[in-house]
Image (cartoon, rainbow, N blue to C red):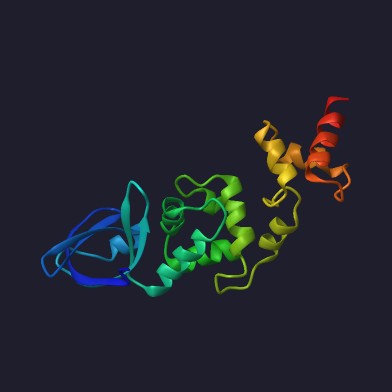
Length: 194
């Protein structure tokens, strides 16, 4: 496992860099905020997150260890992979990303490339009290609002059948929660047809 790379910036793009470590160039994906801090020839140290799949091997780099830690926290949110996590990191300095999550700023989070409203809400729901800041009332309202519970299999099943998240929640509001998931889905569908 690569924990960090230390070397010279051989090349840099808007969201990538090549770090020359003793004659070996490592291509890494970085946030636009970190890229803005670099110039070619700088001697730098990047904390690395390795993402290994069957068809790819990607390195994500962060100038600050806290940036890598925030990135890894984002990866723990349901349906958030490295590309979405990096898109959220691209929203600005790390402090802005943390405050947008703790503050429940869904509008800002969903402005990140590839992040929809549900993913933005899920990030707030799962990470609002884990980013090192106190969660705001707005963030808590998102948690307590109906329809954000991604663990409700009945809601997810209705969404898979073409319901919007709000319609699925509305259809299930009148169904007894103690029933099995299958029974809840049947009841919601039956009531919706009447």
